[in-house]
Image (cartoon, rainbow, N blue to C red; front, side):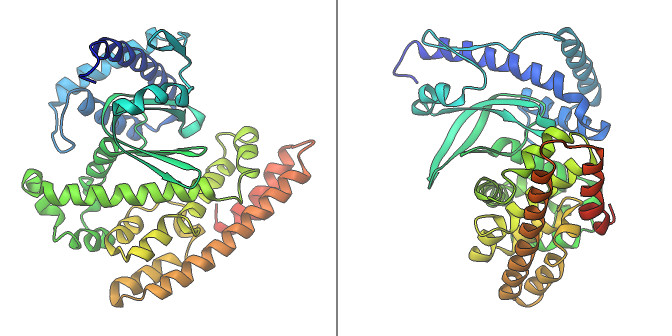
Length: 366
C-alpha cells in the first residue's frame, strides 16, 4: 500500500463505509441472541474496538457506558440504508464481495460479507494473512481486522468462498477457555495436555503462556477451515436446507436442520473429523468434543466412545469407523428430509412441520 499515495485515503474511506454497515448489521442482529450471547458478543466487540488482547478484561463501568452508547446508536439507525462501498470511483454494493476483493487482495486486504445466524447480514474487513485454493474453493484467512460487527463468527462459508478469521477465533477461544464451567471438562484437559498446558496456569498468567495459546489458535483455525470445507462440499442438504430456512424460520426444525448441516460437515470425507484423523490431532479432536454443540451427541452418538478409545489407546481406526457410520446415517436422514420436502413443495403446510418433527426430532427426544 505504501507504493500508492492514494491508498491511505481511499482505504480510510472504505473502512468508514464498512463500519457503517457493520453498525447496521449489529443493530439488526442483536435481538437474535439470548441475553447471555449478546453480552458475550458485546464484550468481544468492545475488546476489538479498543485494541485489547482476548485475555485483557476492561473496567466494567467503561464497558457499561460503551454498551449504552451502542444501543443508542442502534436505535438511531432504524430504517437506515446500507451504504455502498467505493474504490477508485467504482461504486460497489455491500454484498458484492468479489468485485471489491479484486481491488483489495493484491493489497493484502480482504473483505467479507454474507449471511450468518438467523440469515442476518454480516460484514468484516481485515488484513489478508493467507489465500488458498482447494479445487473450486477459495479460502481467505484474515489477520487483524479493520472493521467487524457484533456477529464475529470465526469461520464462514459463502458458496465457494470460505473465510477464516484468526482474530475473531482468538476472542472465541479465550471466552470458552475462561468460562468457569470449563474447569472440570475432561476433554478440555486432554486437549490442553497436548500443549503441555494446564487451564489454571493459562488463566492465571496468559502472557507467560502466549506461545502455547498461539499454537492452539493455529491448530483450531485449521480445524475450523476444514469444517467449512466439509460444509461447502457436502451435497446431501443442498435442496432441503434452503427450503427449511425459508419455510420454517426460527423453529425447532430450523435448529435441527442447522445442526444436521454442521454434523455432516464434521463427519463427511472432506470435513473436520477426516482431517483430524488424517493428522492424528488428538488435541483438536478433544476440543471438538469438549465444546460440541448440544445436538451433536444426539446426531452423532458414536463419536464420544470412539474418541475415548483414541485418547485411551490411540485407536484411530475405531474413530474412522464411527465417522463413516455417522455419515451414512446422517446422509440417509438428509435424503429422507429432501424427499419429504419435495413431495410437499407445492403446498407446504403446518402438517409438513409436524411430519418433520415426528419423523426426525421426536426420535432424538426433541
